[in-house]
Image (cartoon, rainbow over all chains, first blue to last red; front, side, top):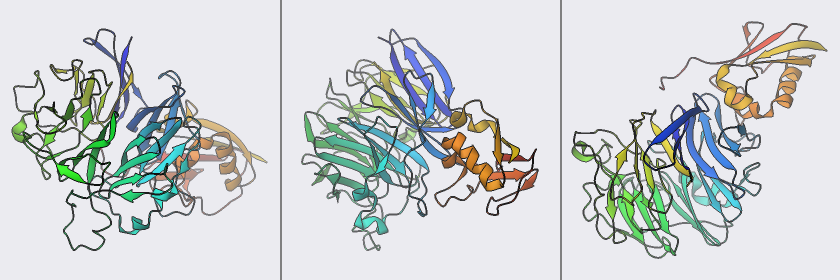
Length: 347
Length: 92
């Protein structure tokens, strides 16, 4: 079957396809000139894209075939008169039949009709702590959503991780064990200021979640009630990637020199891999550039097919893939604009 | 009713498809915008913000004269309403 990767960039979306998992073709740009920050898929197979513009705002687009796209009229949107701005669609997550979208300015929206209409999840969007939320360098976006039956986890940059145990009716922040990014004593620091960068869960044990945070790499074994630091073997704790391949159980991150530089330490671009659930890390496989490579990987720019296939895109527009769960890595020959999002759409 | 033409910038093609010019029938500017959004409702989020004001970096010209669309006005046959992306910001 054709393996298709959606590449969302600062200037449009692109589709990478391969039949032999070696030679790729590229089509695009989709949404020429617009930022693409997210791809997703509804339960009926409809493809989704989060498309935005600094001038014209953001909206959800849908497609049945990845070729013809139509903008959703009733995309996620703050109510009329709101002082919040909907700047970008950051992520999609499918939980059963229900779709969720995380957006900037931070908020969560849900759709029960395959992405045609979206309703705000007020329990998070109007959380009592919201008055203390403030944006970081990357804005203030709800960028990661995890789910397990009645439970939801939502990661919001510069704010923290929120968990719902009742399908989104209530949310509680879950950051114990992770240091905040603002100085203790700062007003509101007890309610916000935890800059989560990425989350990945173990489907076989959803209480186990790995977290790439502004302040380092962490793991929880109890659904977020308590986090522990796990950085043994990493050259830096900073980064934006946290991905887990279900088939191999391997974890992947791309360490970056924190946080003023945000580039690979000494220019040694490589994914790091853990084979023991985060207890230790090492350079993942082979194939990494010999020459210094000063480029980063953003939070949405990684995805896995959960069968040993993994792809990430860099801020320099290059795409790296592995189809053996990290044993060997290849850099694709194409150069894209800054990569914001990667998604395995067909495999 | 007057027949007016709305002109859209090419950058909006992901929202509108290949439609760059649209004929609308209206008596006033506000009615013309309502007619535009009735025909192409997906444009509302791109032209107007959460306060229903023209987005900060979106320009509108009525027969070549800038308009914030805050004031309504009578339009006549041949009126041209042009939306443009402002040359603003330094983003790549």
